Amino acid sequence: MPSLRAFSLFSVVVCTTIVVGLSGCGQSASAPPKRPPPMMTVAQPVKKEIVEWDAYTGRLEPIEFVEVRSRVSGYLQSIHFKEGQLVNEGDLLFVIDPRPFEATLNSARAELSQAQSQRAQSLAQMQEAQAKQRQADAQVQLTEARVKRARILRMSNAVAQDELDQREAEYVQAQADVASAQASVGLAEAAQATAAAAIEAAQASIEAAQLDLNYTRVHAPVAGRISSEYVTEGNLVSGGSATSTLLTSIASVQPIYCSFDVNEHQALKYIRLAQQGKRKSSREAKNPVFLALADEKNFPHMGHMQFVDNRFDTNTASMRVRCIFRNEDQVLVPGMFARVRLPGSAAYVGVLIPDSAIGTDQSSQYVYVVENGKAERRNVTLGPIVDGLRVIREGLTGDEQLVIEGLLLARPGMDVQTQEGEIMVIEDGLPNTYQPLPPKEWISPGLTSFTPSRETVQTTAQSADRKSEVVQ
Image 1 (cartoon, rainbow, N blue to C red):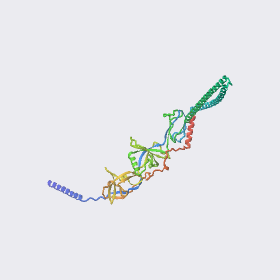
Image 2 (image 1 turned 90 degrees about the horizontal axis):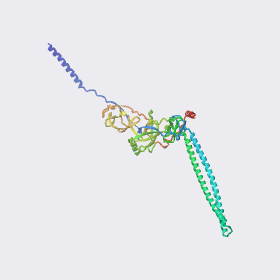
Image 3 (image 1 turned 180 degrees about the vertical axis):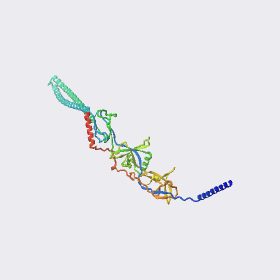
Image 4 (image 1 turned 30 degrees about the vertical axis):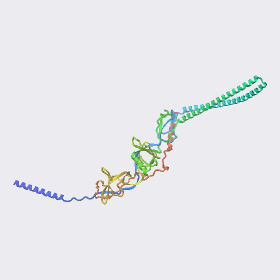
C-alpha cells in the first residue's frame, strides 16, 4: 500500500509539471506588441546674417604712463594734489625749496650787470683809441708836409740841416704814434669782445639758473590719474639723473589701450581674408572691436584696432596687437583684464543650430534630420559660437527638419514621430554686420583734460596750504 500511494503522488507531480510547461510554451509562441516610433522634437535651423567674432583676452594699458621725478635736488617744500585724483597736464604737483636757486639766479644776474659794465668800459676805450688814432694820422700828415718843405728849402740852403733833421724826427715820431694808436684800438676791440663773451656767459648762466628755479615747481607732464605721494614734505630729493627720486606716477585713463596676442593660425586667417577681399587688414583699416569686463555679460564698449606689430615673438609664436577705446565713463582701468571680440570674417548668411543637436563619434560630428518620417544622419563641419548657437559651415542648408531633442534615440533610417520645437537665439550684443570705422570716428590717442570737482579743488588747496604752513 505505501508503494502504491507514493506512485500516485509521483504521477500527480509529473502531470502538473507537464501542464505548466505546456502553458508556458503556448505563451512564448505568441508575438509581442510592436513599439511605436520614438517621439523627437524637430526645428528648422536658424538662418541669419552673422559675423564671426574672434574671442581674445586682453590687458588694459594706459596710453601715457609717466614716473614723475624732480630735475633738481633740494628739500621738498609742499605737495599740491590729492592722492588718486585726476590731474590735467600742467597742474602743479610739488614745490622744492626755491631759495638756493633764487640766490644762484641773482648771482648770475649780477655777473651779467658786471659784464655789461665791462662792455661799456671797453666801448669807451675803443672810442678813445680811435680818437688817438685819428689824431696820430693828422700828425703824420702834418709832419710829412713839413719834412717835404724842409727838404726843398735845404736844397736851396734856405734852412739849416739841423732843422731838416728835426722835421724828419718829428715825422718818425708821428708814425710811431700812429702805430701806438692802432695797437690801442686793437686792445679796445679785444676788450670789447671779451666783454661780449662775458655777457653771453652771464646770460647763459641766467637761463640755466632760471630753468633750475622753474624746475623747483614740478608740474604734471600728462593728464591722467595720479598715484600716491612716494615722498613726503621735508625730505631731500635728488634730481637731474636717471636715479632721481621718484615722487609719484601718472597714468592716463581717457582714452585707453587694450593689448592682446594673436597666434599664427589666426594671423594667417586674417591675411588670407584680406587677400581675398573679404576683410580689410587691421594694418590698413580701423576694424571695430568690442570689449567687456569681468562683470559684464554683453560687450558695451566699442573701439577700433589701433596697432599691429611688425613681427612674431619667437618665444610665444604670437603677435602683439592693440586696440583703443574712448573710456568716457572711465570704467576701464589700466591693468584690468578684458574680453575682446574682433571680427574674424565678413558678414554672411550662416546656418545656426544648438550644440545639443550635435553628436560626436571618433571621426566626425553629425546631426539627425527627419525626411518623410525617417531619421537621416548627416555629417557636419562646425564653426564658432554666434548668438549662443553653433555655426554650421558644411552639411546643412538651413531648410531641414533638425532633431533638437531625442538625438540619442535616433538611428539612420528609423521611423520617428515628430513634434515642433523652437531654437532660441541668445543675442550677445555684437552686431551682425560691420564696416571699418570712417576717419571722423577714429579715436585719437591725444589725452583729454579733466575738470576736477569743486570739492576736490577745495580739499587739494586746503591740504597744500596746510602743508606749506608746516614747512614754513
